[in-house]
Structure formats: structure tokens, C-alpha cells
Image (cartoon, rainbow, N blue to C red; front, top):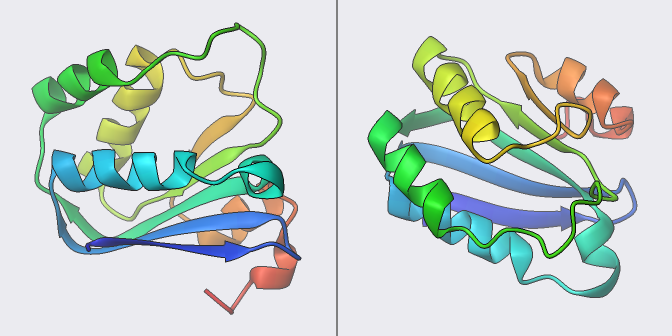
Length: 131
């Protein structure tokens, strides 16, 4: 699978690491994988490490995916943050578009190009150099 999920419970992080070519279906599967955790794992901050990934989807596919994703039952803010780390302009733009269409709160969702900045925002500096 192009996106692997690993838990760093002590550090409070659920890592989704993408490598190689990633289709919209791969991205959807990774979202489902992240949602399957119960209990304490659902409260872990999510870190999407996508610097070694190449997105093979476009704006129309992002919009269609958001339409399929179930919305939360309440408008309350999540108890965790989500950080996306990308290296290319197109991936940055697609993630920003996803956040906008899905109405993700910027207080809890950010896109970064630098891993240490993302880990600092997630308060997980213990992982710098380990991912």
C-alpha cells in the first residue's frame, strides 16, 4: 500500500507515510485506515508525511472524494490536530483544496513543507530525525 500507518502513542502521533505514486483511491483508503482506530488512538494527532509521494489525482477527484466522506455528526472541533507535510507545489495546493472543500478548521489542520515545523506545531519534537 502506498500509504502506511504507524502509531507513535507515547509521542501522541498517528503517522500516515506515503511513498511513490498515490491515487485518490489510495488516499481514501488511508483516510479509512486512520478512522478505524478506537479508544486512545483516535485522539492521537495525525501526521501525513507525503514528501516522497507523487499525487496522481486532480482537483475534480479531490472534490468527488470529499463529497463521499461522511461528515461528523456535530460541528464540534476535533480533539486532535492534522498536519500534512509535502514537498511539491501541486501536492500543497491539492491538500489546501481538500481542507477548503471539506471545511477543515485551520486551527486543527495545517500544511507544511518542513517536517520539524509540523512536529513543532503538533508538539511532537521528540520525533525530529526519527521519521
